[in-house]
Length: 88
Image (cartoon, rainbow, N blue to C red; front, side, top):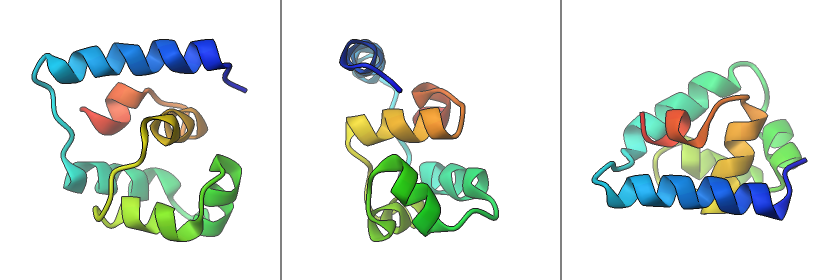
């Protein structure tokens, strides 16, 4: 489980990177999320993350970008970094 301090530090790190010119590409993010989910159901992943399956579907379809807190949870769930998932 991530603590508030850890989440704040992670968010601060990638907020600074975003200001440095890096941007998020909705299409690339959606492809990464879909690939990482693999055979798991959207409902199962969404439940573990603490979001609705429809929200996860919107992220995977490139219709919406998750809030910062959800980015951290998704990266942790998929055992990757926020940077790798959203900025690579």
